[in-house]
Image (cartoon, rainbow, N blue to C red; front, side, top):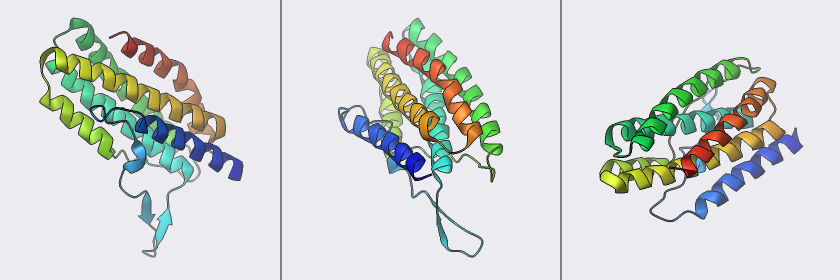
Length: 188
């Protein structure tokens, strides 16, 4: 268990370090700056979030970010290629959220993914809302590359060291899809 927690922590560190290498104009998909990942238990005491809950929350936040930015792109993009990609991302990440929810429900005890956009994701979404024309398309494409790379790193980390079998299967099964999305985003 310690080995798995250490591996998950290492994968989260990679996501954070990757995010640190982004330009200021490209807020990273750094999900580590989300609100505190602690919850109150039945007695009102603070209870730390499990690595599996943290993974589920990060995956759900990644889907939420992809859906929100892609809905925006479906409306604002000028490139037909970007609009088509955005529509595919809304569909794919909606399906991913459904699969994540089903896998999390199979955990012991069951997990409910709680998506919270990070400060970086919020800033990137706000930046996209303020852009128009080809500047929007370029910013959206960069956001998609960064978000898909961060998601891929998170999925690979949990697939290698996660504790919940259903979530490990979800992560493992999603790696090829996210890899394909990353490659598509790089081609925008």
